[in-house]
Image (cartoon, rainbow, N blue to C red; front, side):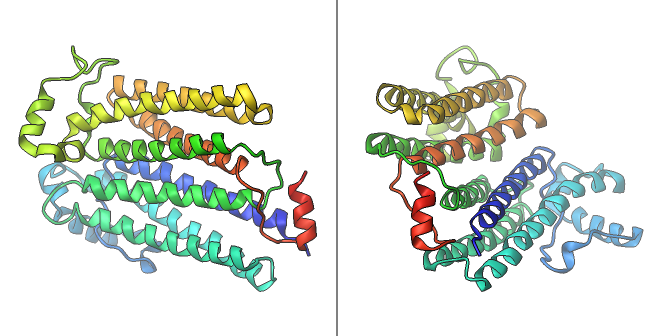
Length: 352
């Protein structure tokens, strides 16, 4: 039996659900909900508190945290339930994603739908998901000890690995979807470079989020009245060169100018495609549209001091731009394919 279509649907579903987790994670962060659940209970934590007694126990555990003592000591139980909701949904969605991936994977594996290469890819995805869950708790734990906020380094690691997992699942799914690939090594080389720069930009976006640097200098295109604020010198005096990863002011500056670089690289790739590769023009148009929307979302998110709606949309825009670049790299790669059918049939399918 040919499982090509079913495997593709399963992988795309998994990718979409990981992206849903990223969105809910963004809402959790922006609503200051991430430190509301002080224990990591992968199995028994599936159900929320179901009685007032259980809710009171959870609230008392939260009252012992630095976040409650410093920022939220005015909270009532109802206030606590409000922030608990988003963190609970985030963790519950993670469990659902695991099941959505694991159960069909076992089925397809037993039915012989996977070749050796796909089996390795499935194992990578599985352990990538497990690692993401552990890393999420490691991030939360950093805000439960002596500081009322999570480490921006751990936040960046958690977000980056989530997006890397989604990108990898999307990459693998494209091997199960017949589409025409075009030999364009120079475009592929530039696209890989764009992917690297975009990855750095995403990490700096997470640094901005973790340090709340998006609430500094809510002006555009200048930072306040100047292109390079005087406070940057002070930041380097305090932190040395580590200021580029530890201080919110230079981090926001870097995030701004990396955005210009990403836009410039996308325009260059699109222009190169239009000169030589007509078959890639739809992908180029998509990439230009995505980077334009993402840039504008970034500007308005900054100008309005990171409201939840714009912050989440900006994060989601980064995801779609990332997947757009992944698609272009795959489109310009050598023809490959997992053998959901016989080898000859798979080769023929990829030639469509």
